[in-house]
Length: 232
Ligand code: ADP
Ligand code: MG
Image (cartoon, rainbow, N blue to C red; front, top):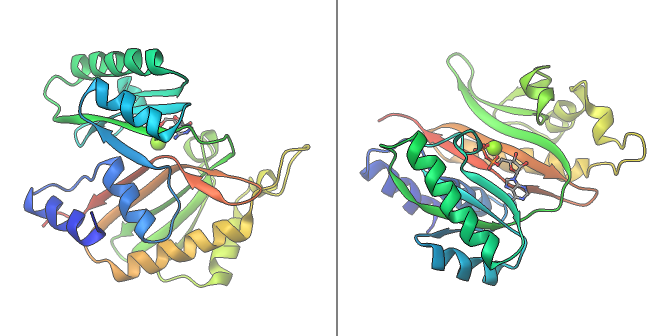
């Protein structure tokens, strides 16, 4: 489905939360690289998709009512074969239905296991006075505990994206710390520019959260994405 179709369908269903699959489809269309993520409605389909995508894979609950998927036991990573995919499917369903008995579950998504990288987060929120604002930070404790994030009002230019990345306190990690590979900063700058363009040209979006994005020496990959639409 195209971005236009996804947004139309969500609005027709009076739904403001998009699924990870929908969010990634939209970001992909905006030129932002995401793990290829497909919906499985059954265990058999999950196995078929895993074989098509290639092991190892990741399975995740797909429900607009469950936005914090791992907290609900809804994420299983590094599944290496048919048997582990089948077990993961059952375990995810069991955990999520017992914690969220009323959740509308459309199935379980299957995606390739991304190579580990430096975890960053890239997002957009709507500020009551400034309008759409982009956010960049390092993932995990850096954002949760240290609130080490940079913000800029949309639209941004290359120099703004550059500054956003340079001004976070943890930037040394991106530049290659203690023998770690440095991140591809020009690639991250381009991601921020693409997000800015997308937000500028797509009305009705309240929030975008790419968390985490794995940053590599060459390129970067979005492994989880969430999009919230404005209430109509
Ligand atoms: P949540 O809804 O809890 O944020 P995520 O989709 O972010 O769920 O998954 C939880 C964690 O699992 C991520 O922070 C990441 O470390 C790991 N993960 C998720 N998807 C992938 C993937 N495709 N490849 C590798 N690791 C992944
Ligand atoms: Mg996440």
